[in-house]
Image 1 (cartoon, one colour):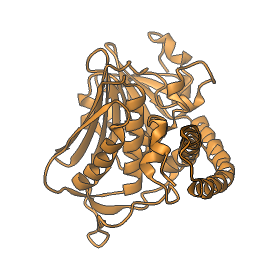
Image 2: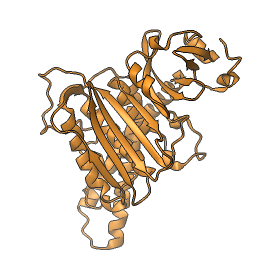
Image 3: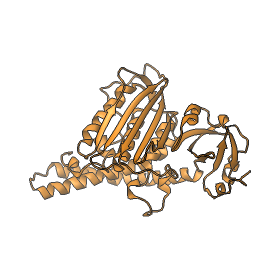
Image 4: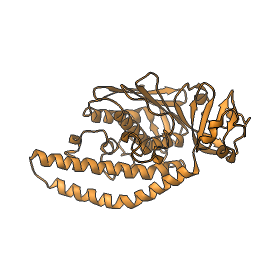
Length: 355
């Protein structure tokens, strides 16, 4: 291990190493325990997304790397001196597992509570504005709780599961469906959602539910860090055998580069509450990695945050073709998934007539 020129590397409590000119130049003790050594060729570690890694200029890139032949989530920050890699810790998996177990205990009483609320409010006939506002607030907060519980459960599952639930879908059509519905929700937020996508059809094998949840979580984050009256620009592009989805919000605050994927480990009350548990970004990055893709968070200019998710276009089994008339995976228990995923950013009035 050589950290003489980079003594700060040992202060990082994650396995970390630095890369320059295509080779590892320093590792900390935690990374050395994971078999990373000075002099290793980075092309042996970053294998599937080498071109994306080589081409990104700034920000925080989330991708899978190879650890002794096993895929492992990691993030990398590019500086003038070197590229700094942070590797997922075993403790992170333990923390997500604990959250998933807690979610299991919370899901049943929450489902019972929402069922009772559905029955109660559906039989409530009143024109009293105050009563309607109170029922809307109850509905919205129940949807927020359902989103939190789902993220607690699924952020762990998405990092552990194999490639299950894959089906061949028209990816352009799928993204258009998601964005069209999201735009209808955004009209009530005071933030414009502008979407541009390609024409024609592009078929690939994906887990539709996971893609939808990742996109909604990214949209929710974009809205939380955007000012009223500003715009969130969404673009979908097909670049060779890769689908690229980009969200860029204006008049936003720069997101922190460090710790972006481990917000759930933060101490309560010491950060901006808009970060929440941070499970939305954990889930979105896990979905990208699940499909063999990446997520890049950067700031192209001051006051502008850009999130770029790439998904390889993989040809699937034509016998497992998604029909546009079929519902996506119903993780929401029959409730509107958009209302759940955007519960933190939509106005209370959006939850007035959902029962």
